[in-house]
Length: 449
Image (cartoon, rainbow, N blue to C red; front, side, top):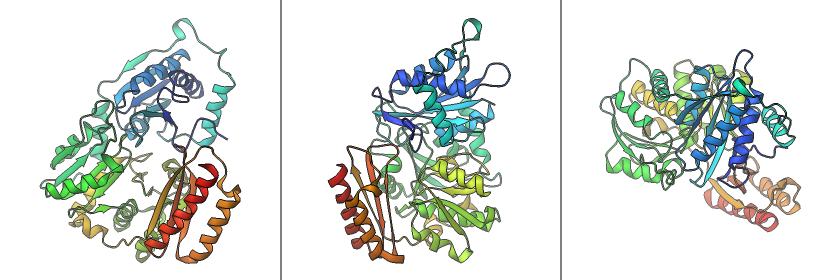
């Protein structure tokens, strides 16, 4: 069992274990040891989002890396997928991004990428934890000229911008498009508007003034209703909301209707199928994606394969099965023809390219999707325990599964990033789904709350 790493890296309240400067130092030492280059000094890229605590963790992580003889390349505030891209593009041995994604500003986290820009496998994260907790590298400290150096890369943003623009078809422009873009005061605040404007769009950018404490505050992917209203107010063609580290995108159509993550996956999967570019005619999604996704792709015989929740597990299944497109209901979209991880701006550019290429409004593209009613509950827990081993919870779940039969499903799990149990119930009608979700949530609260 992992002690530090969750679903997506390490995450917690900044300056409280495990997100302390001391732990960041240890993480830096461990990742530098794990990814030693075969020749010369090894290099590790480090980026961050716009949180106040990013300075503290960045300096500690850098110190740890340099103390093990590796050089650090600092790129400052950039989206998480930019770190993945730049790690590979700059031929670094590994990359690290300091971000807690969609969490509030007082939280922070660290995610790592390998030399190819992919998130680390579970077994690699376990090895990093062993290095930290067993103090295996305490006796391996280099001295003198073998200590590493830190370098600031001033043109990192420009490199990523050029990459993003290369994912948009060269024959297309966005002239005449009116776009509302919500950057959540996060890592995409300066890059995202610029890209769309350079492609010809008229952009109304909102929540683009980070101050270290307002990331994700009443903005971005978590509150797309605000974006949707702005689309109506500005008579825009589309609204795009990013999260704090810009690895997710949520859309609103021209009528102010928020497009679900599953509908987004459907639209882009159908577009790739139309172009003959959907590998093995298969979309990879997670257990959280609803039955409506399968139904909306059935007419094209597109198969939906599901994995556990987390975009790195989506990528793992894609690579293992030879698939090239997948994502999560939350807005992580991965196209392995372009990226190695979820990228909000790549997803946005794919959506815009689909609208231009098919000459359709977003509402028209989303029309084939019909969601099954879903109900969600987040239950605060004081201790972590296998939910299936709790008789009260297990009995409640089995009873509900029996009543739903083939007309629905339930998904109950412990969060990998927060002290929460997450409950999802999908059923033939909303009232029934809400009632079942409340029953499960109550059982969990009685035992773990």
